[in-house]
Amino acid sequence: MNARSIKDLVRSDRVHRTVYTDPVLFELEMDRIFGRAWLVLGHESQVRSPGDFFTTRMGRESVIVIRHTDETVRVLVNRCVHRGARVCEAATGSARELVCSYHGWTYATDGSLCGVPRADGYDRPVAETVGGGLARVPRVDVYRGFLFASLSADGPSLLDFLGPLRASFDDFVERAPDGEVEVAGGVLKHAYQGNWKLVLENHNDAVHPAFVHASSIWAAREQSAPGTGAYSEIGVRQMLQNGAPWEVWENTGLWGAAYGHSWMGDYHDDSRLVPALDHPVFVEYRATLERRLGRDGAARVLAELRWNSIVYPSSSFMSQFRQLRIVHPIAVDRTVVHAYSFRLKGAPEQMFRDTIAFANVVNGTGSPVLTDDLEVYERTQRGLGEPRAEWVYLGRRHGGDVPHRDGTLRGGTGTSEIHIRNQFAAWLEYMTAEP
Image (cartoon, rainbow, N blue to C red; front, side, top):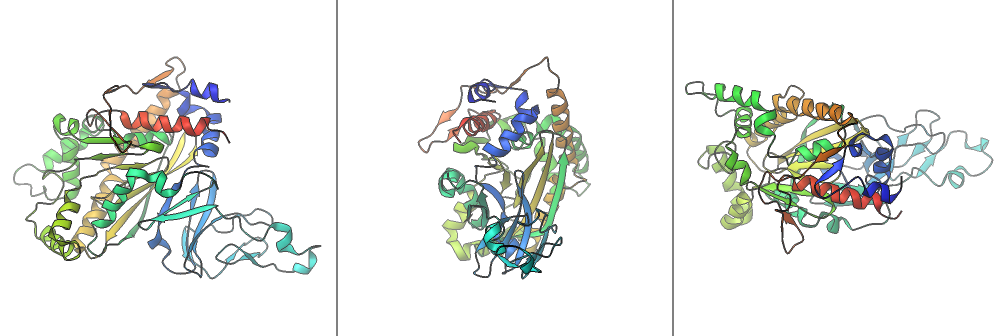
């Protein structure tokens, strides 16, 4: 498939349905998008000490993220250089060495080959023959504790790639009274029979909540009726927020940036979801934050109201309830999402409990919110398989995008589809760029 034929699939206000359904395009995406972009892998707190590791995916590649003895984090391709077996099948752990279970070839935590049983049976020095050890992902970097890697040796620096989206990560970390966050509470996983792009499009979609989540909104209103005493439950508050008046969604800020990134702002700034300013937990939290940042600094941090931020093409995260979701494409019509919760170091323990409660509401397998979304993704994928309706319309508020000096675009309203158009602008650049 050449660049011209790919360009024909994307227009300013619509895309051809095959961008979601064509297996050939999917393989090209794995090579040209997931093989070139900076991808979010996780957080440094997952590999605190030398030998700590976790396994994950970078597009088609299985990789091992491990802290070496020199304290640096290495990202290694999870394939033995001998016969190609996976070296590590564990999701997380700690090891002095990585040992392939097939023939016992052993690697140091930097991936170098350090042991070959019965090495005298090979006709040349083994390390010389196989190139020295596990293949290393060429670029690894860290921003505010978040781990990124790129399978391409070339391309923009991480700071340039993130651009104005760095402020979302800053907001995430600056909310911690001790100035640090950490992954806690394990990982929630879910899968759906649909294309990977659907979940990233949905996370900044402000039109769908009132329709997709209508049943949970109705249930939440029943639970929060006078006398039930349930209004304080974080799950109920989240479901109520999905039923906010249309004007709330219209006035929500929505921005797009280079490389396909986007974020929502000016959101959840009322009592439906954020804690009341006089709530004892919030009063304690604000006091601890002021000790580090001062009153003005704490006020500045708490005034930032970014919601879902999309790091295209691999993840979305939110600072107010400390969530990170990493998207793993498996096939053109199958996607797995891993969701992590974070603890704000130095914050009251109740805030972490709220984080976990929120995670279960939006990311748990029994979530009334998540199950709605997964159903819609799969219905969409099935519908896109119908050949007669060729185009997918992305024209809401098309032409109303407002450019800013920093290169970002703001949607004319919060219900704009600017974020999807922005993602496909990046998609087209990646897919048609010279190798």
